Structures are given as C-alpha cells and as structure tokens.
Length: 297
Ligand SMILES: [Fe+2]
Image (cartoon, rainbow, N blue to C red):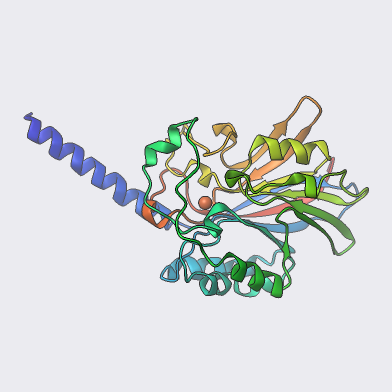
C-alpha cells in the first residue's frame, strides 16, 4: 500500500467518523431513571432534567423534539444551563420549551448563555492546565432570564427558592456557572430546610460546588456541562469532562463522596453541542426523566 493509499484510507475513515458523529448528534434520546432521594413517606415525582440545549434558530428538528417532551408530563423541569448558541436564539429556546414553561421550572446558566460559540481546538479539552479565556461575543443573557422568569421559572444562579409539588416541599438552590468562576455559593450557604427535599443545581459539576452542596446535606444535585464526554470510546466511555469531575461520572446517576458523606449526583449528557463541533460518538443527545421516590423505598 502506497503512502497515498494510506492517506486516502485515513481521510475516508475520518470523513466516515465525522458523518457518523453528526448523525448521532441528531439521535435525540429520552432516558428514564429512578432515584430514592425524597424524604421518607413522599409520593414519587417526575423531574425532567434538560441541559446544554445549545440552540440556534435554524435547529428546527431539535426545537421540535424538545417541545415534544411536554408529553412526558413532568411535575418539575430543571435546566442546567447552556441554552443558547446564537445571538438570536432566545425566541427559539422559548419555542422549544413551549408548554414546559407552564410547568414548575428551575434553571441556572452556563458559560454559553453569556458568550457566543467560537471555533476551538478540540485537543485543548485534554489539557488539565488550560486556562479559560477567549470568550466569544456577548449573548442576550438577560433576555433569556427575563423570558424564563416571566413564565414563572425560578432563577437559581447563586440563589434559592422553595416550592411545593403536591404535599412535597422542595428547597432548591443553585449556583451560577463554576466553569467561568461565576459561582458564589456563599450567597446561598447554610443547611437546607428541615423536612424538605434538598435539591442542588449547577451547570459545571466542579468538586468545590458539589462539596458545598454536600456539606449542607443536599439530597440530590443536578448538573450538565460535560456533554457526557461528547466523543466517547464505545464500551469504555468518556475521555474528558471539561471540569474536575472524574470521567466515570461524566453522565448519568452516580455518587459524589466526601470524607463526611455521600450524595446522589445526576449529570446530563445534554441535548446539543457547539455548532462548530456538532459531533457525538457513543454519547447520544439526551433528556432525562428522573422519577424520584422516597428514601429507603
Ligand atoms: Fe454545553
């Protein structure tokens, strides 16, 4: 085989992987998971966890799919940031969420809700020492927050709220995005309310924020940001999380453990990707319907 043959073979394989990765990035999947995290004696509730929508106005298929999730009839919707991927995406996000905004909802923001996506070197995600810089153009973040809060959703960026679903009291708190150091846990610190389901929400699951939620006795933390590793090795999993979370916790339900206690963590692999890297391998875009049950069920 000549050098030219080897180069041609490599180029064909690369093009095939890119084509496959694009197709998988459109293979929207709904996952159903159960977790025993509610105060004893609570009736189950359904929580729809969405993350990393990365919506542009042209993504009509994604918008329609997100819109269809209302049929799952969740009791609560939680979105863990990175809604936007375009200057004009706020109306598209509201269109995608559709009737979901009429349900109780909680949200935090991710870095991509502040800055427009830019073309990046994908190998930088393998560098542990990389610094986070070079943000793109500013996005209409406040318009997004205004639309969501006008619909009745609670903004948990370094903030907290209480709500009830049936007889269940929920004390939810969140941080702004730790990936760009906008988290200020001190603004919400202190033990969660006695007797309530204690829910922590953040975009990027950095250990400093997870440790804070755990210290205050959170029953469950929801996060996104990792894209589940996005380009994974089949039967092995993620190679990166783009934060200090171990790769084995890049997506799904896991346990975050400190020397004091263990706490359930759900990381969503997310719905979207940057428009510049619309590829997923062995890591489908997802929404998760978490059915939460009482502890020791
Ligand atoms: Fe993201």
